[in-house]
Each structure stands twice: as C-alpha cells, then as structure tokens.
Image (cartoon, rainbow, N blue to C red):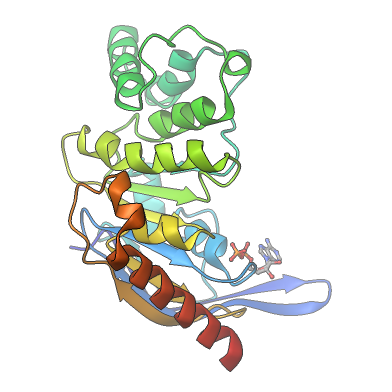
Length: 259
Ligand code: ADP
C-alpha cells in the first residue's frame, strides 16, 4: 500500500470567467515513509493537489487514494496532519493547549493530552514553552507549535503547504534541519508531501522532487534525491546538493518554456 496514489487526476474549477483547469492528468505515488516535495510556478495547482488529498475538494476526473482508501475515509480517521504557511494558532490557547486540540477533538482523556502535548513540544524543540501564548512566541516558534499540532494524532501522512515560507532564512534553515528529527522521534514512518517554492528546501528535505508545469499543472519531471540521511547543515555546501538544485531548476525552466 502507498501513502498516496493519484491516477490521472484533473481538477477544473468553475469560475465566473469560465472553467479553469488547475491540474491535468496528474499521476503520482508517495510511498510509506517517503518525503516528496512538489515544486512549480505559482498557480500550477500544488495547493489544489493537497486539498484533493485532504478531502477538502474533489477531483474532476481521475482517482485519489490515501493510505489505500478514499480521501474521505482518511479524513474521517484523521490519518493526516496538515500545516500551512501561517501557523493559525488560537491566540487564547497556550502552546500546549493548541497542540492538544486535535487530541481533545478526538475525545482523548486530559492526562493523555497533556503528556502528548509535552512530548510533541519537546520533539519540535519547545520544551519549557508549554504555558506560553502564541503572542509570546516568535514566528518560527509558532510554526513549530503548528507542526507539533499536525503530529498530535500520530498521522501516517503529513501535508505541508509552504510551512516555512513566512520565516527568515536562518530560522527557515533551522526548521528544515529539525523537521526530519522531529518526524523520526514520532517512532514510526511518516509520509510527507511538502509544497515549497524553495528549490534548496525541496532537495534538502525530500527523497523525491516532483516538478510541475505552469497551469494547468502536469508533472513534467521527478528528480530522485539520493542524498544520505540524516542531512546536516554541511550538506548546504555540498556539490551534490548544488547539482540536484540545478537539475530541478533546469526542469522547471524547461517546463515553463514548453508551456
Ligand atoms: P499553487 O498552489 O500551485 O500556487 P493553486 O492550487 O492554489 O496553485 O491554484 C491553481 C489555480 O486554480 C490558480 O489559477 C487558482 O487561481 C485556481 N483556484 C484555486 N482554488 C480555486 C477555487 N476554489 N476556485 C476557483 N479557482 C481556484
């Protein structure tokens, strides 16, 4: 079973200006425990793809399977966690309460919620900040809380839509470095689908980078990132990393020129 399977998926939106094709004939597999980055020009349908996987929208044609079943089933059993560019924390809840919210909605007992929230905050490097409110935390720390919340129910699948885009470069690199360790700390393989505009982020984090054409988004290229893990900061100056980023950049430019 794959974490994710898209077969010839198309999505056409009805808009006041007429039909708008966002995705066209997209076929993609993401294995269990695999991290896949989606890159492509703005508007090529990357967020749309995540919405289809998350069962927040339905494809116009083709099939989407999440963990072997329909997206609605995965959503109903809370099989995925999701985090966006903005951390969307509740300002009146503490960091621990924000992280514990999915557990509360799932009806877990208070003692378990508190224990798990503490564990998750430690995992994302925020031990000691359990009682802090979002306004007392930096943007990077808020995004860490949002990641911890996305992991609260131990989902086998994590959907990340530009999760670090609003952060300064150094904070962003720190979070990129910490994410795989936090995922490893969960204790079982997690599949990740990451939408990003940063090519170096895509290569640094992913096992595979999927390149989309301009809208309507089609997959034009998949670049396998064979770099060993764990990946540390030294990798940023590694020629292999630079070569992969250049390969993805060429694939993007080729797709844009062909469109
Ligand atoms: P990306 O994430 O790659 O920037 P999106 O998936 O957000 O792209 O959008 C793809 C295209 O679909 C864009 O042209 C966008 O304007 C359009 N679109 C996205 N959501 C809707 C919607 N709910 N209704 C109509 N058009 C939409």
